[in-house]
View: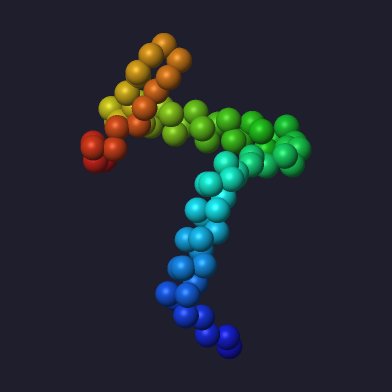
Length: 75
């Protein structure tokens, strides 16, 4: 099995991240087409998460179309 030096890996990873930030590159969303079932499941999961956060009081409405998750409240 190959051994990896954690400090070298961390140093290499840090330079890659700063290079991406400097160039203005960001992670792209998946462009894979989704079937109807997958889209509906993702929508259900998102809605359930939204309602759970709203019921717990962690979801703060900042404007009519914007919300913020309050991390200072523990559940």
